Length: 493
Image (cartoon, rainbow, N blue to C red; front, side, top):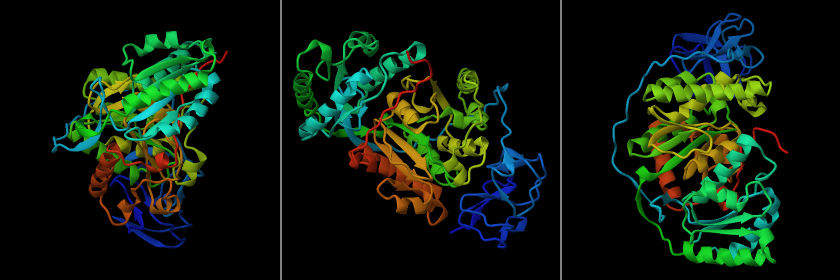
């Protein structure tokens, strides 16, 4: 196992891969330094003197400016490093676009829906139009577990607090997301549960849903019936009979759509887990598949890397808007655009938003950007897509699902038990977390600094994803966890 890593030849800091004791002699390329203090795992230390105001460089890019003189061998963190981010920037398109060579086909066992879409689960979803019927949805989920048999794999309710007392974009977002959920191919049957007096009631929502299979989607407005529970159970039984007629069949992996997200990151996330997911992304795209990268605020400071990989200038312009729109969102609420990383990130060794963003964007691999999506917009083109959504884990993962992701890959250095509407694969950046939270973690990328290469782990992750797509349950599914969170931006009436 390596003791530390200098990620790029231009870096003036290295990252400890294990706790380094004060006084240890460390050699990295042309640099030899003594650790001037204890360096925690995942944290940075200076390879040479860095003057006050000078750039601190990691991943080959500036991650901030030194607040004070930092001696060689000194610990580099929030006490002596600050962000260099400002407000809106002017960007120039400098394309660095190279395609990926095609690789041989791969397959998974999935469900073919009547609209020709492929799904990786055959579940029945109960989707409330408004938070007022959440308790009914939960009660129905509990009673309907008796319908989980044959090829019906789960009955899941997705409570949320919205659907009424919303205005403008908030109301539109709720309606678009609920409509997208209703069409998601992982659901073999859907019960849309309304109240009757809400803004986003069933008749209104149907305009957003558009065409649908009447056998697959059923509606119940609770105020219109005497016993809503009994009526809903009848509809769920019909949906179970319909969904139960589907069975898994061989489907090309080119039809897979995989979302990519990180949360609770540490200093190893950008060295192990995120690069492994990036290599996975390239591998899936080489087979004709699709990946989606989101959490726009965690692109700040690394956005030009993605902009330069845009396939054309139109996509570049969309990416500029993607970034600047989020910056304007922050400033319109009188918030600074760099109020990140989180306390857990900092404890794990991430010091600035640039540090976090350069690690975060490792998940995008090297493929060209083929699509840029607004919040709630469905994937239209294969390959790497960028999606507008915040960094919040539940909100961003839900956004990935409603944009079409069959599965979400979630990298973490700190650990988290949450789920999303689709199978959510937890990928640890370090082996300690994988062992400590084995009931949360599905895949250990921490082995990249122990005994496995990035390519080996990417291949192993690809095989694991095919297994999940073919029915293998992830840890969150085994625990019965399913979460949904809608992005709220505006006024509540």
